[in-house]
Length: 598
Image 1 (cartoon, one colour):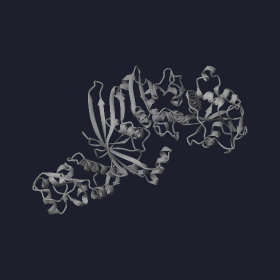
Image 2: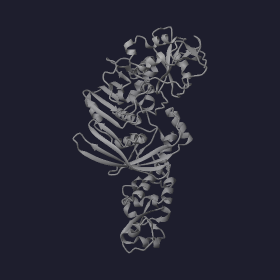
Image 3: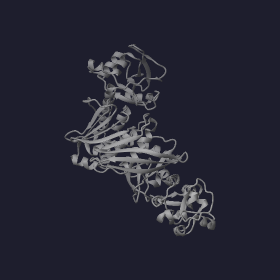
Image 4: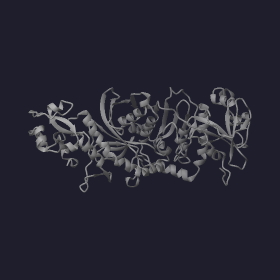
């Protein structure tokens, strides 16, 4: 751990943070009331684990340097300060003035002097309350006050600000709430501000660091909080607002552009602690977005259009995350228009394939109600080694296990072209009516996927889309669907040169998995006598009725026939004549002539 130069205490302590039982622990510098000592603290999602010092100090001296000019009556309010005064407390001390090596010490219960320890703390009890939150926020502000002086940082922030669409911030905050496990999210215009709140988990020290940083990946044990890729996404808020106040009952801080605007965009990295003026209700997280650029008319325009795919997609994602908690509904109040989302008819076809219906009940500001139903189908797959390497390179996070890809459609109205979503909609359209959701790797502005030709992660996702389509047929067979005219357009079209591939987004994707499912699983609609259709099994009896029933069979056991055959010829006659059961091309519309059935 020795370096050729003496590191600041914060950097020297960083490797020792990894010795704690928490793998997400980091080192943050602390302001010291005297120049004679350097101070730092080791923190993670749960709070402050230990302090660091450039020299050995007794407990009272250490706390006086940390607390500075805190009023004694304030100290009585905070459990953290009382805990540090009496309970065991860990201290990491620099071995010598010119060294980067450090030594663990511990203040035992009620003891004033710290004694050396040969082992790092393995079961520290972190402390986290309002006073700790203030220390952490002030530490982050002081650190970035120096960083923003670098021309490279200021230049990057200037370029970054120009990348975002004006209304992107709304969906960043929505996605943030979903990732935090919120069951209720609210956007409300109030006076000259937009108030956003949700009942998801509260902020952690690493969240505040992430909100203030760009290009920094933190490994939160609480799960990824989607403030955008490494803190970038949240910066979309500042495209519209010059002031953002955040509070959750523990944290309370503000980012505010100086007036007049001087010093570039560095203020977006400088959280300023603000004493809470009002008690936050329960565990609600609040974002107060103020000083809108261009006035409130621009805010109202941003709120004017909520993508139709947003409530079902975000609601489903939230409900999946909350499944173990038993929550059955997710609600979004979009400035007075309320959307309540529920999941129903969840059906697992195997370990990797499933379907469900997502219902959205909406009430507008005038009290008018409407309902939409969305069919979601999903497929889980194991990304390739190269894809996982690409994911790590882009996100600075490793990926293990399965990845899910969803296809979804509005059961009442289908668009001519579906859109690519990564929770939020992109500007990329697909050649089929199916919308697609997965963890695509996106451009900084979140509007484009990264180039598919050289991005193995995105290409893996694209290649499984035919397997997703197969689940629409599994759902139809399970539901005993009688009209396939809306379903068949979802089928990808093979290329003229090769029937086993289709072109999508400029890439050739394999169709063998979809073709295998259609050929070997009982998911294709075939014509059978009405009496057979009423039975659970096909008894092969003749039926004189021209009324056609629908059964579901493997493609290997069925044969394509012109739709007119089914109008004039009996199913049993066709089966006897052709040796296989006839496909119900009469319920497929124009898609009856799709080349995949050739």
